[in-house]
Length: 197
Image (tube, rainbow, N blue to C red):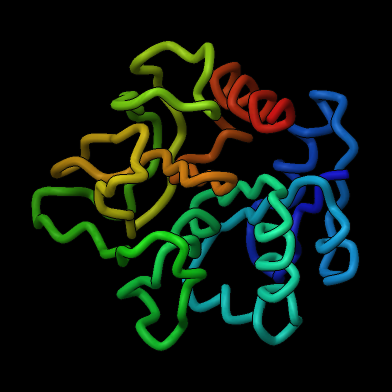
């Protein structure tokens, strides 16, 4: 079973519909016990980074950490990916998971339209289990004002006023800044790859 974590933020129904379309057994839940026993964990995200503080209040952070330690694949989407890092300047007092030693920051160029909304290229820079079988530079759908820098765990980037991490991969942790549930066939292939890990 895939636990899609409900922390009162995030694009839950679209993510669930995408997994349903792929025939996966998934459940939207805020129950830490179910998260601990899930075979895979998905943390969707839309909105402000401060919403992730709810993971602590609902004892979900500890459940996620237990699942990750057990070797279960974890997928963070949009703010869910940003949460994998140490934190974000959007909410400096709200800590992230800290699995990747970096901080998310806002797009700051005056020439850029922020938030970054719409289709843009995701460019593969390293081999990735999550991106297996996906073309090297497909278009995917974004909606965000903050982004993760390029790190040693970056497997794909997007250019928007400079390069930022489009996809992160660190052991059994995976993160995507774009929305696979809204990215057509490319997004569905990525989610299927996650299911097959």
